[in-house]
Amino acid sequence: MQKINIQPVLDNAKFNSFHRAILFWTGFIIIFDGYDLVIYGTVLPLLMKTWNLTPVEAGSLASYALFGMMFGAFIFGTIGNRLGSKNAIITCILLFSGFTVLCAFAQSPSMFGAFRFVAGIGIGGVMPNAVSLMAEYAPKNIRNTLITIMFSGIATGGILSVLVGMFLIPIFGWQSVFVFGLIPILLLPFIYRTLPESMNFLIQKGRTSEAKAILSKVEPSFKSESNIILETSSALYNQAGISDLFKNNRLWSTLMFWIAFFACLLVIYGINSWLPKLIMGKPEYRDDLSLGLTFLLVYNIGAVFGAIIGGRLGDKYDLRKTVVLFFVTAAVAIFLLGFTTSYILYILMFVAGATTSGNQIVMNTLVAQYYPALLRSTGFGWASGIGRIGAIIGPTLVGYLVSLKLPFEQNFFAFAVAAGVAAIAIFFVDFKNEK
Image (cartoon, rainbow, N blue to C red):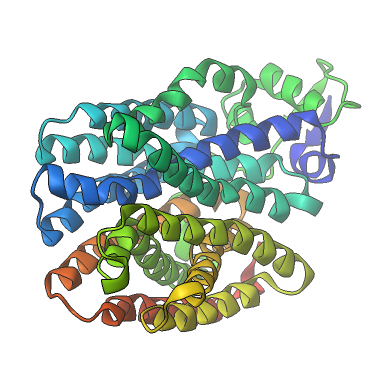
C-alpha cells in the first residue's frame, strides 16, 4: 500500500480550471454576503417612511440580521468540520437566500426583523466555510491572493446592492432589492454540482473514492489506484474545538483578532446602514436619496480597491503591517468626513471604504493565514461571530446619535475611534506562532 499525504499535493498544485471553479462559486456566494451587508442601508430611508420608524427603531431593526449573522458564524463556524464545508455552505445558502426574498413580503417591522434574523444565520454561517474551503484547495504560492480575491466579493456585493437599489427601487419599490436575493437559490443546482467537498472531511469520513476523484482534478498527474491510501496531516480534524484557539500560545492573538473584528465591523455596518441617511442630514444634501446612495457606492468601490491594493502590499511587504497602516488611515479619513464638502468628501469616502471594508477583506486573509487547517473554520467563525457583536452595536449606536441631532461631523467620531482600536489590536497579533 502506498500512502500519500494530501497536503503537499494541495499546496504544490498548479492553478487550473478546478481552482477557478472554486474561486468563482465561493466568490459568487461572498458577493451576496456583501449584497446583504449593504441592502438595509439602501432601503433604510424608505423603510423609515413606510413604517414610521424612529432613528433608534431603525437602528435596532438593522440589528436583527446581525444577531443572526453572529449566531450563524458561531454555529456553522464550529460545526462546519463535522458537516463538511460544502454541506454547510449549501445549507446556509438556502437560509440566507430564501429568507431574504421573504423580507419583500413582510407586513410589519417585527415580521421583517424575524426574516432578517434567519437570513442572517445563513449569511454568517457561509463565510467561515467558504474561506475554509478556498484556503484548503488554493495552491500555497497564491493562497493569500485567491482568498483576497474571493473576499473582494463582499465589496462587490455592496456595489451591486447600491446599483440594484438605484435602478429597481424607483420602478418596483424597496421590496425589489430583496427579491433580487433569490438568485443564489436559482443557481444552487450548479453550485452543488461544481463545488467540491472538503478533502479533509472526505478522508475522515472514509469517502476515499470521492477524495481520490477530487485529487485527480487538483493534480491531473495523480493516478487514482486502489492501493493508494490518502492521509491528512489534520488528524484531529473532527475534534478541533473552540478551546484549541487558545492553545499553543494562540490566546493573545485570538483575543486581538476578536477585538479588531469587533471594532472594524462596528464601523462597516454602522456606515453601510446609515450613510445615505447621514448624508441626507447634511444641510446642502438634505433629503437627496440618490446622492446618499452615490456616496454609499463610492464607499464600496473604495472597498474593492482597498482589498486589491492591501492584498498586493501584504504579499510584497507584510500583511499584518499593511492592515495596521490601513486602519490608522481609516481613523484619520473618517474623522475628517464631517468637516469637508464637495469633491473632497468623495475622496475621503473612497479612502474610508478602502481602509475599513476593504481592509476587513485583507484582515480575513490574515486570520485564514494565522490558523492551521484544522482550526481555520473555527478560528474565522469565532472572530467573525465576535465581530458581529460590533456589527450589531454599530447601526444601533448611529441610530442613537442621529436621535440626539448632533452636528453632522460628530456622528463620525465613534467610527474613527473604533478604527484606531482595530489598528492597535492587529499591531499586537503575534505571528511567531503561525502554523
